[in-house]
Length: 461
Ligand SMILES: *Cc1c(COP(=O)(O)O)cnc(C)c1O
Image (cartoon, rainbow, N blue to C red; front, side, top):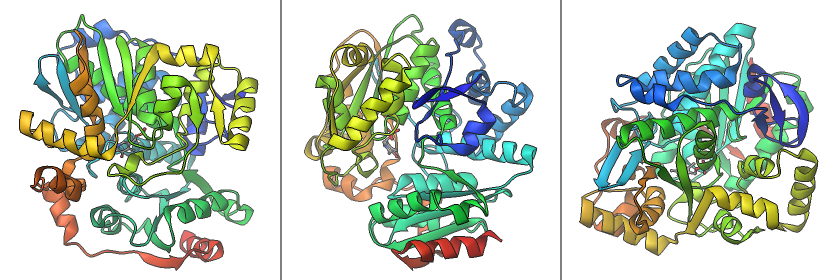
């Protein structure tokens, strides 16, 4: 399997190269040059298949000969051992043909654990093989930082530096990062906003003196290994839905378009997906783009589903590349125009192609809140605000397919919103309680590039 970049379709890279680099040098995202087919019947006939076995069957198509099957299975087994539910990603039947796929049983209680735990272990495998080490740097406003730290902690060949805006993440989110005791983890609270943190990270990536000292890897750049690790649970959900001969719809709370794109490639690989529903909050560029081609930027609004507060959905570039028949010249022109004008009107061929696969809806905060209450009253199910955007769509569907809404975070990560909607606090998992009382470790720095760089360089030795 070889990979090109969305901005250069002539590139030919192997999996072990693209996983370490993350983002292509030309600013594009890596894409496989062909789509493997998964033998669905074979998977369905194996009644005792485990989640790690399924992960191996899917991921092995993408790694080429860079890793042996037996080693990949071992990595997958170690990866999902740290998840707390015996089904890893359980499918909950709430009514007839309506289901919720719970993706919050990993160490930090959000779905990002599923791809990032795998990514951390794959990093370790390739770094050992090449006898290399990397420095992971990233900025976070919440869930990504804690999932990345947990995935990289205690790994010998990795140091991880995560910037967060001081006093601007929730207490739980900050403590999930700062109470990790591993000596390779460095938390930096910046006196500034998330955008300030993000700006520092972008500058660090192009800083030659830092690059001369270490190999930098990104966590919020969109690593292909994350997408393929996520496609596993769409197959897993389908296996659990029992009515094998039916088509399936997935409803996906969407920010960066990574999760829903993983669903889409699962369809390309052979899962009988009818439609994918993109659920957004009031930051609805993806809803506008899919419903009428209006890809125009607006200011980011703060909502009760902060992990979806995004305007530029980086992974959407992968879908665009595909919808443009993998023509990187055309894609470059589109991205150039979009960056310059802050909008692009998708019409004709591209928009028609999108509509083949996707439907969408924007769900504002008050409907989200209402939905949390409706699902609690009707099904005794407590959902976090991100999940509730997809449950709102689930409740409106009326068809004969299997309908599966994704639950992307544990409700106890967002206690205030839950209490406002239903008047009670969600029960806290044991480990989360422990975190709240643990000692924190982080350093506080000014919003100043050279200060941050100096701190990183000092700690690289
Ligand atoms: C990251 C995240 C999302 C958005 O997922 P994308 O893959 O970026 O579209 C939604 N909900 C939660 C809880 C998240 O952490």
